[in-house]
Length: 216
Image 1 (cartoon, rainbow, N blue to C red):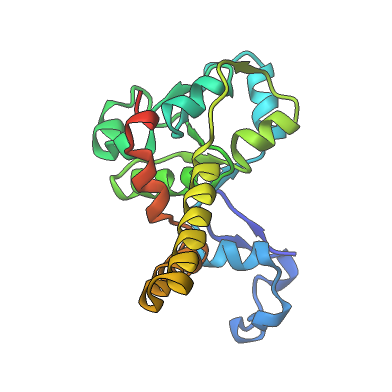
Image 2: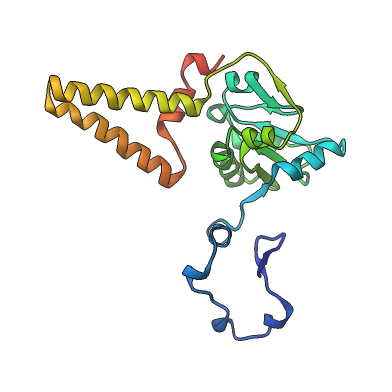
């Protein structure tokens, strides 16, 4: 099976290296999700919670940046992580201030989505060796990695679900009992959620992240 190389390309088995390239192209239906992800995002580097735990257990110095909101970070974060919320991230400045660009910069969030966005922003700013932690903080907790717990908070993902559900419920009720045109509101929210799922970006999440209770 082809395996990814360090430069982001796919290394072929030796018996296939000198064959006609046209015979090596698989059908899309024969590719797994991981293969398609590698082809679509060849520069994306990730690390599993287990692998991260091994590095942390080795006692080395890791540059681990948590891009969740401050309340989420205070409630629960990996030991050794530092907070840099995604909505305040200055990728160019962070890329310039890195003391050891050759050392990996590990990015972690709640479940992986915001981490991918942060990694993309940093790579676009010229940063190298940027690595996203697969599954985020939730996966690391499940893997048994050391964490620091604090005051409970409502995660940004939960806030998005609460806000979206409230808008759909309110818009539907007002559309039935007050004015039918208001039914466009839940339709708009639904379209936004579909767009967020397809693009892995959430405008409502970015908006909520800027609310006062998520910035202090």
